[in-house]
Amino acid sequence: MPVAVDYPMLPLLDMTLFPGSETSLFVGRALSRASVEAAVASNGELVVVRQREFGTLEFTATDLHTVGTLATITSLTRLPDGTLKITVSAHDRVSIDGVRRADHFRVFATTLPTPPCPPARSARLRAALLRRVGTALTSDQLAILRDIPEAGRLVDAVMPLLAAPSARSIHPHHSLHQGLLEKLDGEQRLLKLMKMLPHNRRAEVPHNGDFTQAVPLPGFDPAGEPQARTTADGSLWLVFSAMPPSWFQPTDSSGPLGPCTDLDRLLERATGCPVFWDSMKLLLIDNPKPDTVARIERFLRGVRQSWAATT
Image (cartoon, rainbow, N blue to C red; front, side):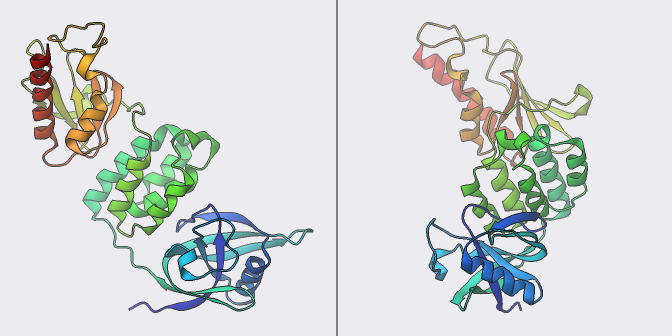
């Protein structure tokens, strides 16, 4: 059973470190510099933890988040103004069990278990996440990420990459990162990240030969019913023959799409799954649930019935 260990502690203002990452930090506060020096004088390990509020100089357990990261200092440079530039390699999530003050910050921290996501489920979720972030990363980065065999570890590896300028358009705000660090279950961590990523980003459309099954969704458009098509990785695509549907007659008050203007967001509410679009005739649910198709069918049938009742 893991036991609490006494470590030097480095508080951060607006950054969360994820296990597996290597990060450069500039340390200017006197007590923080002392924590770094204490770690270097020992085995190089220290706990990096995000503080809850700016301006706090004296810390108790309530001033810090309850989960931090155990890291090893791999390099240290002393700058002329006294600031320390360090590179740290983060490797474990830890719980913050207590805080004490010597001539520097110290915490009692316990390494947290991170149960792996089952391989089959992990493969499907990993593929879904890589599709989601693929346009913001380089081919070399994606190649490295594809070799990571577990969902939670993949999230930890993706987060530092999303901080690059090329990925800023989909990078979750730094205030949300701590919630990902605190998710110990790898599957839940990945799902949480997917929910943080911007909705309505264009989906990458598979070729027709990549679809493995097509299920009709009757009751929405008798002139050409939509289909729910699946791919080998478990993703679900909604393919509409026409949008807006044949029964819809636009008016000045309804606009050109009427009830289908926000179809992706309405489908999200109906299914509880993130929905992405390529066009209004092609939408993607990359992590469907067992009842998702049934929910979609009920929703689409209801859209037509409710719209007919109001016109």
